[in-house]
Image 1 (cartoon, helix red, strand yellow):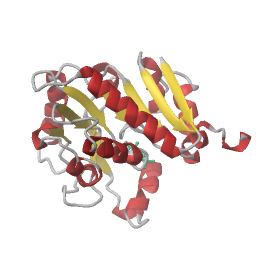
Image 2 (cartoon, protein in one colour):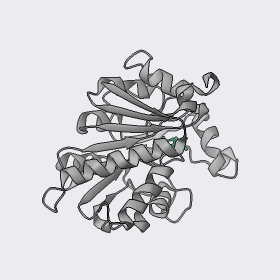
Image 3 (cartoon, protein in one colour):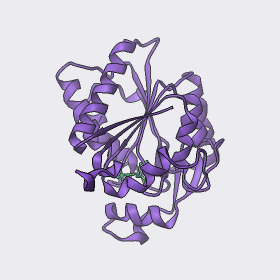
Image 4 (cartoon, protein in one colour):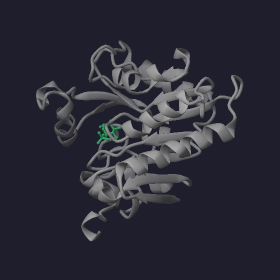
Length: 253
Ligand code: GLP
């Protein structure tokens, strides 16, 4: 089931999702023996959520000491020191500012020599924890989820993926608008990794350029491989947090 919470601004949407996550963690009351496991995305959309989680952590409203994280994806070939790597992003925007122990953080290694092993180990580590309590995500403008591009199958798991031209174009804004600088491959959790291991999936969708993807996610044909986010309809507990622009309501206000 997909629930939708729509807000007039990106700020309000981010605030709502951050509070939702804080409540989930606090209600769970995680301990070292029973940690709260969360899946995390990169991209500009979750930045406001991370900023609010940091604020709440510093204010003592939530702790990440007993939280385990699994990031969705990473570019292949970028070292963690590269500012465009998702490693760098996550530490810069979130992990460096909260009380999470380094060993609780899991991100696919874009420099792995044995890619198959890296992906299999990641998938196995998620399974070892049993369930992901909450998988936060974003949407690509054409409906990709993590780096699951059009054509990804419902049963896909963590693997190497090729980025499609539209993703390379969209993400070139972080690479001096030079498409040739954007990695052509990435490692990504699969659709099954997200849907079949998580109790809840919460996606944050902001801005008018996500209107098409959001519509396909919620109203499109279920499980349409052309729009991988439509697989979310196959999960029993999905929360879509969006702003009016993404929901296509802006012109009607
Ligand atoms: C990248 C990430 C996705 C993310 C998407 C949207 O492609 N791999 O996980 O959802 O960007 O990013 P943004 O929120 O910046 O539009």
